[in-house]
Length: 126
Image (tube, rainbow, N blue to C red; front, top):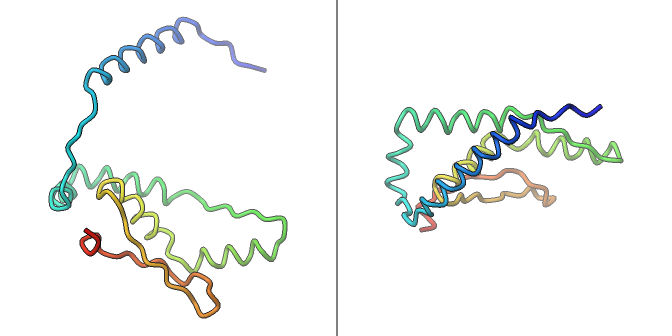
């Protein structure tokens, strides 16, 4: 059964959304891009670091649920993900939001399955 919609709260939320949209539209976009040195300095701030770490923990705490119609494929994929350090991979990917990009090298096994993703320093690719 559908919940009853509170029209008063809905109207109030729509008005609030309109106000926020007006304010942010007036601000426009910021064209400044931080240098890698500035980003590294900002990441030393305890409040900024805590916010970023909280975001990473939120992503990494999610349970990876692999499904497949064939059990053998599911087991193979689960094993591959277990072999990779998925937490580190996600951390590097999430850092790209603040650093502008992330570089990871794929290292393969002899049978061409992925062995690991290895983070590379961003400074090498500037």
